[in-house]
Image (tube, rainbow, N blue to C red):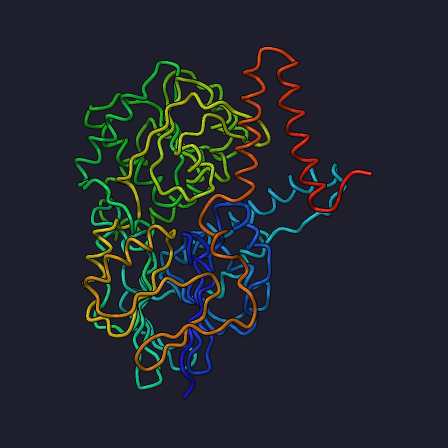
Length: 536
């Protein structure tokens, strides 16, 4: 019998692009097919060919609807995949909304890019996929409830467990034929924290051979926030942000994070601990996702409180671009929740462009910010940023409230892994930056008596009878490890341009500025000469 092989084609050294290929029993089963986010270098992977032939994939098992796990499914189908996509009912409902929205974003971004490219005599590009192409894959989705065993290609059996991360999120248990008999694998997906407003505590089986575990917060602990404590912290932050002519901007993932923050804000206003200010959800995706949450409210923790928040008189949703633009005219203190959560796209960028330079603005981050994203750059204290080609001074207050994270922190992850025992053959650490994976590997090495591995992008492991063996590469990885999960040269260039601009502005006269520019020109000329391309 062929020895199973597990390939890691995303979320390997970073927190995005989740994609794992299991080759077993003659079948090719893909677990997640997510979009890369973060630096431009990583995002460019979305446009490049898959490291496998899409038409050879028999089945996709999807942990949840977040775009970094599902976002390249339309591209997969566009490339020739025509098999089933198994996921939970709620994830299927959310994907019907989120993937089409992602397609709209691709089309919109490419239109703007191609206008610039034509002006610069550069080649035009095609979107990764369109909204119509995203819509066309929905018949391939097959909904499977938690705990229900199914069998797919190659005799592989699987079932979903509630991961507590997002509406419909799942950890996936698989049973397949291994080299020395049955083999059990568990893909964690994204594991939720102990306290989450709309989700249950994460569940999963024990007694497995291989665990593929996320490590997003593998190197950090959050304050322990029960519901009451979280709302106290939120109340203080909102009160501090309350300026008579100001705004509280909340960059938020449109799916679940927005609904959680909204529920808490309205609960605080109902209780009288916050004045009843306008709360505006500036995200068409959040509006549509909210309908899916209403559909499943009966199965959610605190579903009734969520429904009450939706019906609050001071809450409204913007739909059209004109309604969104009109928010710039709102007078008096108000709260705007807008996507995307890492400030990489969506209406939040327009809101930031309009407000970041004003001291009466507060930006509140309520989720993880990946390296290289505008959200992380702001969180790290950048004095200026570039948005839509314009340099923006950051005078707004920047705050973070980790209590809304959809991910377990370090101690919660350790406890979750411990509950999966006995783990017999190995643990693969994925979906985390290197610092998070290293910290978690160090801790687990003291409690787990199996090999703990941190695969790199496009690594492949043979899952033999006793352990996993790294296979030699037939082709190079699409990116080297040092270019994954961190800022790239595009970020460095933008930082340099902003720093240069500040230095030039600080000089008293033109002569001083000319000195700086001549020095830079000499450095560029020297680099050109050293590379054999000197001036004539």
